[in-house]
Image (cartoon, rainbow over all chains, first blue to last red; front, side, top):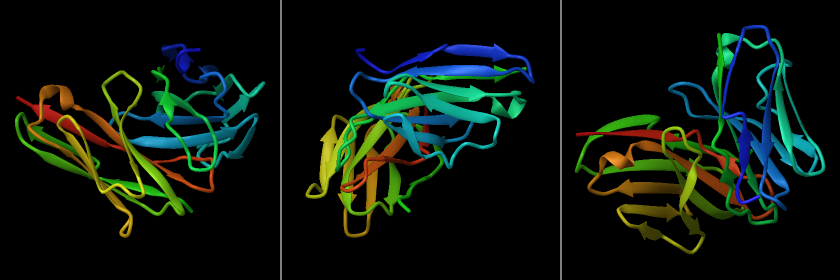
Length: 115
Length: 112
């Protein structure tokens, strides 16, 4: 696609429910990142994919959080049994991955509100 | 471990004033550094890229500097405008690592 697409753009869910957030990276981008921004906080790293594997998932805050990527493309971030502290904007970014790095392109984010 | 630290976390300035944001990194071996601007409700967008050999680069009222020896970069905003209110994120890449390292960002609020 033309850019990184995230869906939904907004999600309101009840505490205790599971949610799935989706990220469609730019075609051909093998690196994919999930970050979140809580109100008044900076970017918080969640997980990094290289292809379908996740060499760094050190940022996932608890076992309620999981992510997968299939076909080296679409990624889904799943939050189980959501809590109010999960409320945040979840950002996805993708980049061409080669030695030396390149520009990361971000999606618009998914604003998650847990009530 | 490759890390990127930004300061301050947030700042408030009056319209027309200047400000400087800092980015310190431990990424090695260094390849390049980008500054991104994130407007409210939007995803971050690249403002400028600094490579090892570059000391300063301007993009309109934004000027980025890089000191590869001390591993520091700064983003200077001149004659701030209300539209400069945003988060500014520093992202650093290493020559031997596919994974980019992101700073937490600095939130700038420009008031009339």
